[in-house]
Image 1 (cartoon, rainbow, N blue to C red):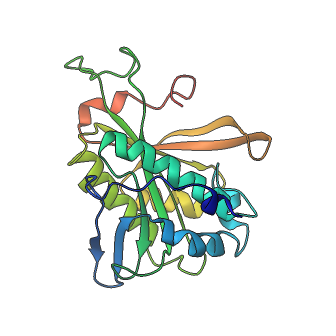
Image 2 (cartoon, rainbow, N blue to C red; image 1 turned 90 degrees about the horizontal axis):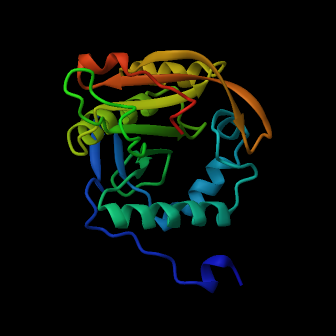
Length: 226
């Protein structure tokens, strides 16, 4: 008996804000919609095509199992259902089409005054995004379009974020180009962090985009920001 058969999965609240589907491009056709349990088989297939996504991300395993996907989605639904906001989407080429990529967001916890607006002293809301695109669909702008939409239309406008950040391995030039095409700028060129799945240190770079020019002095600090 599989893990999915042993327990009733936590359902996604379909009233959560930002579930989509959102049409973000006509040519090529590109949609974002909330990730579903029904996406798991395709998600597992894509993540096992090769090790590119494993090598380019900090948390996706290889080989990738249905149990990995199930746990990740269920944990996302628990958090989203509590907050009322969707934070994980599938990239698709039609509203109900198969998953061709993934993008997620989370919010840094309030830090008791470390991240504040330089002029107003207001606590800043900081979002973080991560993504991957199927190796069968790279080179078509899907990553940068999805990142730009989630940042501008959702995290800034809907969620009220002041800053949105993202990270990439320093040597991962394609991922860095995606973030730059989405309007982000590199704030920290090199930062050595321990990656648990690899059990070794890796050098990352930190990107950000600011809703207000005045907050540009509030840069990523990996000694404080998770």
